[in-house]
Length: 420
Ligand code: CTP
Figure 1 (tube, rainbow, N blue to C red):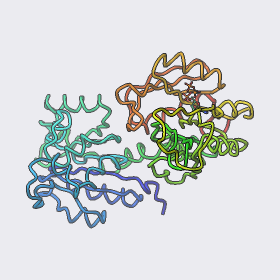
Figure 2: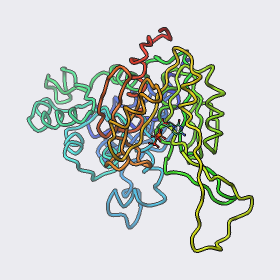
Figure 3: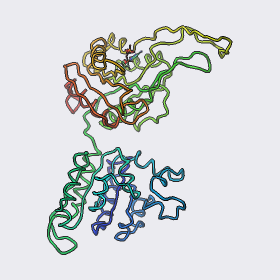
Figure 4: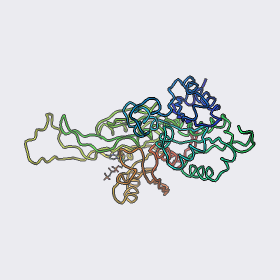
């Protein structure tokens, strides 16, 4: 049986509506497709379905309200989240690929819209950076109320996907809009969001990521603050979109994404050698790494002792990897660069695009809010060889990675099926 959602982590929020009885059938479908489902219930939801039902279906502990589980001395969800023994719960929001609230009551919709986090589910939802789907279910008059209508609109403008409830007979006996959408329709929406098109199938993509380090002596090196997160996100998304991905990475604290071949390197020279070795076979090179531009002219073979008040280190230029690629690349191979600038962002990025003969460049200023090296978000401008230019506001790096790949495919005029 195919498991198209294997490795995908879905947080399912279940709230206190009579429609909660349909949530287990949603879980059954998602689990059957291989998804890793964690169910978070509100206290009220447990009056309609027991946590044990979901635990049996998912094989994972259901999270209700943490301080109601005898966790002494915890007076708020934030406090509970901050405690070490609950770190796995903090990680839930970070690890989730998708959050789904089904059924969603007027109450949880109101909390999400109003920024209220007074239980585990609402706290978790506020911390989510992944896509969020909400499937409302409630009495028709509540559904038609201005309050719910305005809250639903608010969520939609923030990018939350709302699966409209059906018109039908409701629990109260009344007929109207408010019945939870069909589980099949909800699962279809999950699949649409989690299963990207395979528009890089058959392509070999090489991504570089992270900093390079240039040794000074056996103890020290010259490096930079690149975290590697942007490059790892590009590698992960390219693999999800069907590419055969090689990730040439400097030292980072990140784990290689599933299905990606990792080539670890340390210095700029090693990164250059790894890229040049891959060059003949690749279709697309994405240089997201921050290779050191200079290295110490001499590397001491013993630790440099502090014998002077002042120490001058002579640095020499390393090779520019993209300039080397420019010399040797074949027709039809795509090359994407990144430009990190703290002034004249666009002008400098356009210069690099021209000088290094890139197809696309992603320019960003790490001093801007939401674009720091260690951040999970980025703010960037994508510039194409054809003159295309697009500013992207603060988005998760994973989302920017997808957009960069989409714009690259368009710039290179690649068809979605591996054809030119
Ligand atoms: N790059 C490279 N080889 C280097 C340094 C950078 O291939 N030795 C690549 C980076 O991976 C990035 C692009 O060149 O895709 C631009 O890097 P950046 O550091 O912004 O620019 P530089 O060309 O190094 O110019 P400067 O440092 O003067 O801004």
